[in-house]
Amino acid sequence: MKKYMFALSLFALALSACGQSQAPAPAPAPPPPKVADQPANPPPPQSAQQMFEAKIDAVLAGNWREAANTARDQYRHPKQTLEFFGLKPGMSLIEITPGAGWYAEILAPLMKGDGSYTAAIALPKKPEGEAAQDKSALEKMFAGDPAQYGEAKVVQFDPKAPNFGAPNSADMVVTFRNVHNWVMGDYAPGMFKAFFDVLKPGGVLGVADHRATPGADLAKIKDSGYLPEDYVIKLATDAGFALDGKSEANANPKDDHDHPKGVWTLPPTLALGDKDKDKYLAIGESDRMTLRFVKPGADKIFSAPADHSGKPATN
Image (cartoon, rainbow, N blue to C red):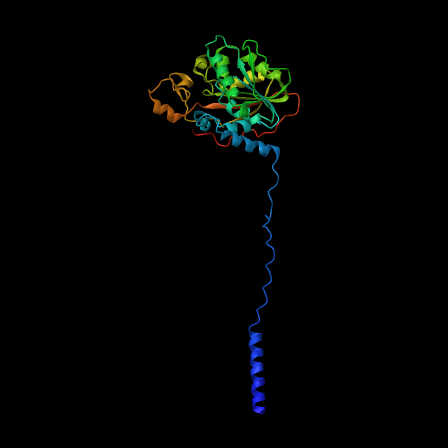
């Protein structure tokens, strides 16, 4: 009997041990919540000028720009040029004689909602003339895309008695490859005086044009499209401006300024057609001066380096 009871006890202990070994293991503790990675040095907020520079990049990449115009950025360097002139958000900007609108395609969207843009166009001498065609093309461009050009304005002026708006009302006046035409038309001094009048004290005049070889005789090269840089500076300073900087952003060392049909021999015009076309395409567009002037009488509206261009362009 004792042996039986002892065996029964051993059996009960075995059952108890088995039951303990089959008990479920405790559930593992849940992992701590994941904390999002934080940058060691979060980027500082962008300034208004930094945002404006980013807007320039976005405008230059805009799908409304004509492909042929975008292809010329390599010669006209719009971002470097506008930065050198000191264009800033909120400015009232006037572009003189925008032609078919190469720069208007950039400037009007750029200043939309962030200043103002006005295209000043010469009164056409005849309905079928170049000025009339440019005016029609520009107004058609503006009307056809209000999302980009809805705030752009167009004004007309008489080149012989130019007026670009109320005195002391504009922050910046710019003009690209037009001074040589005014010189050929013998009304350049009046144009520069009108620029001076419309600008606020401290306002900026930005000029880019075809640059002649230093020391060139104006009378001999007047019809070539090239101008001596010192002559353009004199036109501005005689009108009351102070020279505030020069840039080599639009320089082209490959251009020797001596071509059968002046600057029009080179692209984009290629006045000789297919004759020596490859030669002139290899040179690229003309060598250009890029000048910044300020109307004295107040602190500058902007602050920009004397030359924002870096090394001269090689195209």
